[in-house]
Amino acid sequence: MKICSLIGHKFEGWNYSDPHICVQNRVCIRCSYKKCRSSPHDYTSWEYREEGACEQERICLRCGHKSKQTHHEFSEWTRVTGKSYDRIRVCSRCGLEEYM
Image (cartoon, rainbow, N blue to C red):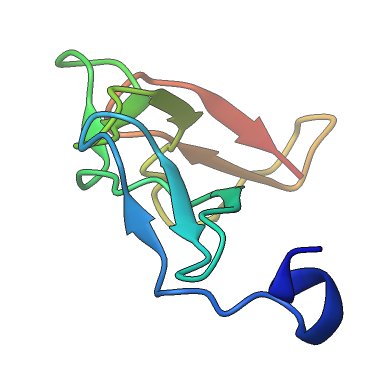
């Protein structure tokens, strides 16, 4: 009978076995039992994908996973009269208009 089944495993710290994968593991120093877990991605800063567009992308430096989002740069709300809406704001990057 293995000692770990009686008193439990004694694990070393979490490590990356492959520097290009976002998975960590640790090994019992008595019986070599291995546990794995997903680890957080190590993303770059958000960057716009192209001029005049609002799609942003960031990339995990470890595994290359890409994450995307849309981020508009809206002006302040401006009051308008004679329209079906009271206020308007415009994105300075792509020209998208929002109405309220």
